[in-house]
Amino acid sequence: MALEVFQGASIPRELSSAAMEFLWAKWKTLTATKGLTLQRLTEESSHQLRDNLLILMPVEDDFVHVYAGAAIQISLGHNPTGHMVSQDNGQAALDLLELYRHAAKHQVPSFVRMTGPRARGDIWQGLVLPIRVADGLVMVICYAEQASPQHEVYEYLFQTSQEAMVVASPIVNDVGDAIDGWVVMINEAARRLLNFRGSIGNLRLKHLTALERLDFSFKLHPPVEPGTLIRTVPGPGLDLEVVRFAQVFALVIRPNPETGRRLAVEAPALVPA
Image 1 (cartoon, one colour):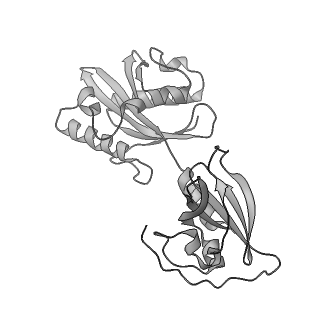
Image 2 (image 1 turned 60 degrees about the vertical axis):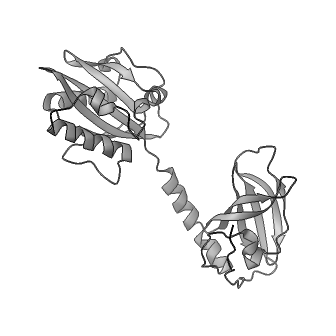
Image 3 (image 1 turned 120 degrees about the vertical axis):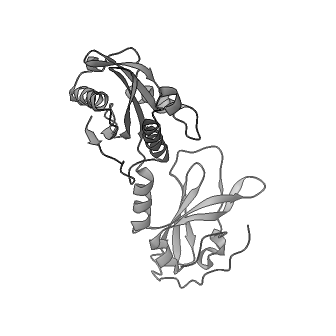
């Protein structure tokens, strides 16, 4: 588990979540007004905090876990409550123990990023916040959440793909067959191929001139594995692969090799939903 620590007067805004910014600001305000307690810091708010909290109490030169939220337990693969930090083997435990000691001694917060403890490639980030509970006794509160870079990575890969792709939410007939779809995503390759630069708000697939004669249908049930290829649909000058996901489907669009022509398509007039 690799550990990266940021210490200072602020946390990296490009990395932090709304919950972390809330806790950071609240810790600073309560510290400045001498009202910092565990209850006041973690009391209910619009942010759900409890599942992502880890609370540690000092024991000589070590710390014992006195509370671990459900998300923390799932990440670790066990409930660490009652265990000393030093009981965990490896460099990661030593790094965390040193971080907790620093927080307690200097009473300064830290922003931390780390790889997950179970070698799954996930990244966790959060705050280490000290709270003085008595003279010479400082507990450490950790808030940790899993970072989610997948969306921006997927968005980049989708938009920069050389394959023309349109993602749609299915429109079904009275027997449950998907016969059209509301466009929810269209990548740059599809816009170029279809010569479409309009808005996708209230846009159906068959509003696109190139797809208006598209005749396909497929069952939404029974459920299929995400990314299941349903069929290849021939269109006017196009070949389309229909890929079905749990809640949407995708059309992968390619010029028909028999024509190989680029379609000239006018932007359709949008109609209300």
